[in-house]
Length: 280
Image (cartoon, one colour):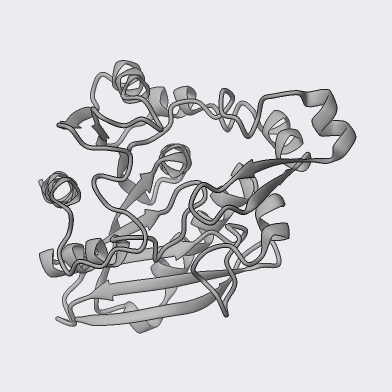
């Protein structure tokens, strides 16, 4: 298997996008799968590398990346050394980053014998479920979209609500990272960007307008994003496929760091469901 880690892409927002690719060198075009991490996440979190290998072993060209403003750096792509970048992140930047990655994998001549650029699927976990759904609805290059424990509404999230007057006055509000114990900043620009782009950033609108196959996967023991959000998306798109992973939590049994050499049972089930959906 060929694994290329930490390729630096220059996106649209003056911060690098770090990208990994996993694939078997066969000189045969393979379906492209692009995976987007969620809020307070990163491409090397938990079992994501094992998940990437599983997709590659199944015959996909698998791409994962750090959003440019997720709080990581080129030197330290794991965790959040750059909290100022994290505070300056927003949904629009993440959509732009994803577009940059799609452009890169579509136009990179190094991969021209290994990728089928007419067969690109997006997978988004948690918050990125909304990002991939919006991007899939607006970008004709995307042929299938999958959400894993995905959100259904950006407007109701803690990052866009709260004491707006205090947030505006202070210019920043903080969310505690339960694992690292860092105070993670959200600068007021996050709210302003959401309101300025609210129609585009309405996940319900994107889901209702999807014209491509749409798979929704959610654990029924998810305490972070309740399964009701998946049920809503399934209602909004009658043609979507809805798969419940019994007893699975928000990260499908994974954690960070992940010491095992095997995928957790629930995440392995997720990979199988995704692969079958993309192939068929």
